Image (cartoon, rainbow, N blue to C red):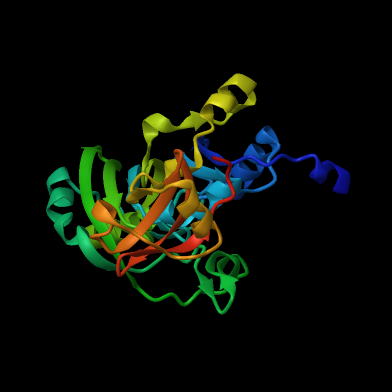
Length: 300
């Protein structure tokens, strides 16, 4: 096993995976690590086994940019089945409440405005949130009822796309930490008919969109996998960029802050420095200086 691990390569960059249903995010990352024979990989935002769509996977030095992708806006297309609530808030769970009532399109549309904006949302019991060091879903699977507190989340848009007698399709744009399963649960309760997610597809994560995603089976082709690997800085397209010379790059890589001059100096906040088109460091601009938080070991 040790010899096999030693043959893995230093792979740096992003692959925007179109995750299939029936596979969790950890399994998907493990599959990509084998395909690319990579030493290190991680993902930017968990998808449930039921869900499909964008799962950004970072390799090597790109894992240092994962928090910036995770903080970006997410978009989903999802179907809610009316008439039943489940313990997982999706179709994989056990039914816990039922109703014969069904909402009309006008009922649904009238109820959407309170779900838009910054709201308090109670996460699902089956979620990855930690309670005293344990995941909520592990407690729930063990028969305990996780005690979770409502959290502030931001939903930028929630639109009804189509509606039938038993199901409705929605599209949502939201911020970090929002649970689509909780939206379905709360819509069902508010409409008096109960509901759960029966299909879910993520169509955006930060700078990555559905059009960027590559199906998992396609990545078994060496040519496709080579073309699918994006540069490390693909995860930083929503972060301001500062171009530096090689001397400044060397100082940043040593963890030293550098004074910015001219047009690069006026703003405060996060930024990344690049030399020769290659990311060197990412950090905060404070009082006209770029203070590196993470440095990158990439040739330029």
